[in-house]
Length: 300
Image (tube, rainbow, N blue to C red; front, side, top):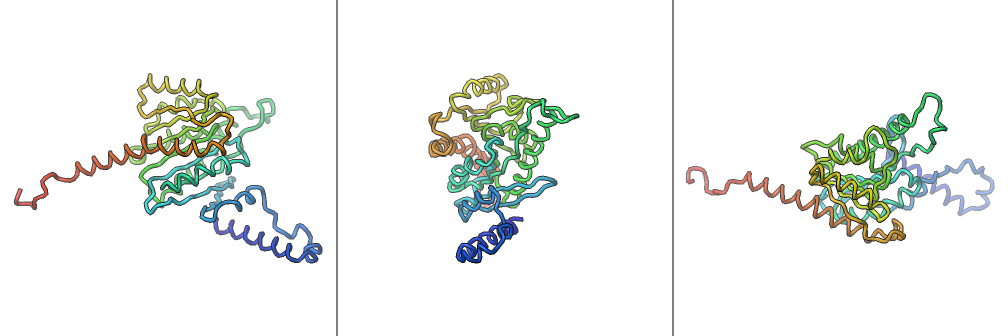
């Protein structure tokens, strides 16, 4: 699917360049003869050449994933980034700096285009619909996209899996990590300015209590009260993997301008809370399997 998508873009660009080189020919052709690029395709064209664009079709869903290879031979792990669903066409911009930076630091990164959020108010629902049903369909769409992203990592087989959720994607990401975690493949979760989208059967707080991996809860000042509430809940239930920290950048900075701060802060937290503990655990396991007496059998 990726090759087909890129080939279509290449053909469209070639035609546009050819028409631009000969204005007389361009005037005689119908505008409909030139393949039109939608907004997402135009944005994708601005991506770096080493970013792999994956076109995914599952059932009625058609969306894009952006895969960034790590800047080292062996990836430190795999990171899935799920943008805020209300970012809409800005999802590429919201995740661009982090996707590139984390890849440069040695992480295999994959950005998932979020599904369109349920915009309709309750009084605009069609007959037979209810808010809970609409919310559940949206959640299922997000869960399916995260599942496809996780499957994309199968061929790379990273040792560490992390999901980074922006804003109102936090509920879906928390539910996904809770449902897909297992002893052989722990999933870690990072929340960036988490916000509950729509309350369903279970809340974001309830999902966080069931996550066995590390949870890093980063928030701006305006969301500090909700984050502190999650922290107190985690402490009461002795959830040792939960860590809360305020974003160091100013509230007015905006995502793009504050990215250098967020990049360094996030990298440090990932190393301290996820990467280093994993490496230390792997070293202890390796030492336990290695006998202390290195003499050949029969001479011990």
